[in-house]
Image (cartoon, rainbow over all chains, first blue to last red; front, top):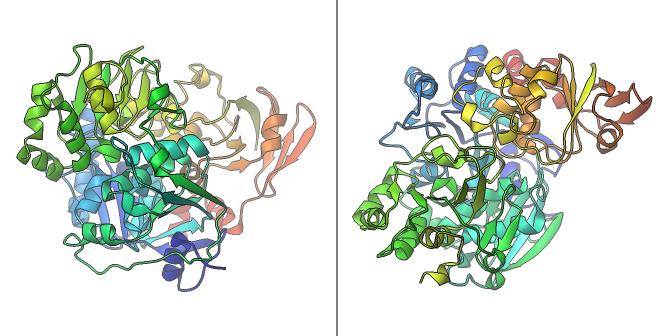
Length: 417
Length: 160
């Protein structure tokens, strides 16, 4: 019996063929933490009483409550900053150089095809877009890995998604993943790997990052794409070390196989309070909104900014709506400045922010009051996710979000063209 | 371990277990003060040392924040029985030494307030109030080993 992509990567690490269900210990290529999870990990790490396993293979990215929202969060970041200095951590990213971790690490070439990456943030699965195994873990796992360079895993079974056809106008990776989660549910891939194959050429690398990012919203251990020339073009010039390309075995065993016809996917909106509550844009009805957020580790990349720019250029944000735009990294922010996007965003009436995870998790920079409703390009719409427990979050692509900011209620981009 | 059952439903996510607005601290006692508050404002008052949390499908979905199992453990909960767990929460609970078991039948057979006796070594769950017994899959040896040391850090310290 052949192996899935994830099983191939694990087998190479272990040095023999591994089977689904087996518990294994593997060397990791990168360990990630942020200002929420790293302080807990640092406390646990200190109990082990060892040096870090490799100063170049740990990334510390304070991005959740930065620029610091209060004294407590400043103290948390300071724990991380001091730890990075003390241990000579090469990849510590201070405000001014940083970005939202899952946009930043691929951009800097710190995660590459064939790697095993663990991060104390659930959306670490994003890097599967680059044909590596990456998954979210907790702080204690992070602490143990910082000391030993290893992590334990149960080798997952996989679900195969075979993509067919092409994306229609105004449809992007976000619609594809919301459509899939709507189909399989928030525990549809529990403990499993989601492997994406078929006509993946229909998807840009940014689309793939968005899709892999939300694999966790289906409960998956990881999401992973085949390697192709689009992957290669992205890592070229960024990779500062060798990487290894893996291919799935044709006769690999999958617990389920889904054919996804991209032609049939319309813009999607996930209703509160679960990402599986998806509706086709044509079935949404008139949902009035108070706030729109474009950004996050899911949709804060340059192509997301580009689509928002195209829709907002020369238009005005509805007077009853607050539009917040967050380019995901400093590099993306600068590119937006160079391309003239920021000027148009501000002219349209948007507030543009330095990179931060703040609004996505109701941390800061865009908290909702009781009864308020937001449409966001973020990844979760759980109860109280963006503020008051009686507020609501709807999820969509940047195209739907930008169009809706103009209309004042959730609409298809076709309606504001 | 033996305790009174506190019961909730499916898809209880980490944002509900410990809302992000409290993540600017990692102090277990402070986190425990806000555990479950968006789902059940009374949780803090009704939970007693040793109580057992009985929940539905996909418990702990969402964020990797270890603050979630830390808050539950610091609240006094001695064990969680679920129909299924989200995977990061599952390993976080194991890693911090919070016993958790998956057993669909037990969840259906236990009501809020029932007194439950759990043996994680062999996976046995007894509902002492109703006089019924259930069997969960016991932990694999590797996880038993981590639990024996009280969590991953003690385990690593011993082994490295």
